[in-house]
Amino acid sequence: MDCAPTENAVMGGRVKLLQPRRGYRIAVDAVLLAAAVDARPGESVLDLGAGVGAVGLCVAARVPGCDVTGIELQPALAALAERNARLNDASDRVRTLVHDLAKPLPAGLGPFDHVATNPPYLPAAVADPSPDPSKALATVESSADLARWLTVATGALKPAGSLLVIHRSDRLDEIIAILAGLGWGDVTVKPLPPAARVLVRARPARELRRRDAAPLVLHRPGGGYTDEAEGILRHGQPLAF
Image 1 (cartoon, helix red, strand yellow):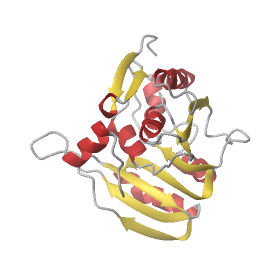
Image 2: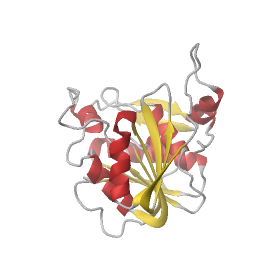
Image 3: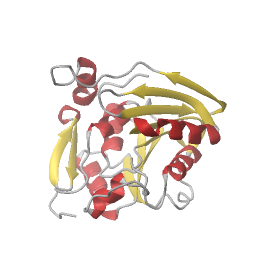
Image 4: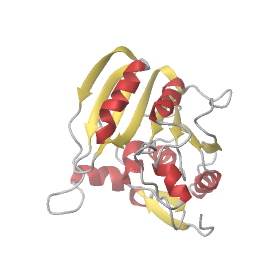
């Protein structure tokens, strides 16, 4: 990983981010996921697969008084996430731990009011991984597959908590089946056209109850973001289901 990161900003400059000059860099997915977390001051949020901390810092910027814990496999990215918390004057309530989700979460961590996660999009069996090792780890399942990822996520939540996942739309059925099997079958799905992505919100339910929310259309036909997407990405507005 390049030792000289770039400094960028999201949410109209509300959140500053140091990230690797090359390799995996954040996309709008992180901001959309953070906007979907319906946290309140005093509540706790877990960000699984935190990377450089974008999701957690966007949540913290939008919801003063909430506490965010990030879990990240790659030590170099976790170190940048810690630097980013300091850069945004949020280190008192945003922290990032290095941990492999293939192992149980550290003792005493949680339970949380909300878990937000952007798991690697590609199964190892079908992926053509990037030659950049850091980017490959961020985009292709490795020690923890999707089922393990969601098992850890639901296991870290309070009984009345909520799980937010952003993922590829072609894996939606797989995600719903895993969540239903874990007892988190109260599922709301929000498409994000024209991107081949979906947001999924899950709450506890023994039987599957799926709702399809109105899509969030990201782009105008002639180019540029729609007003709703612009409000979320640039102005820190929440993403409603």
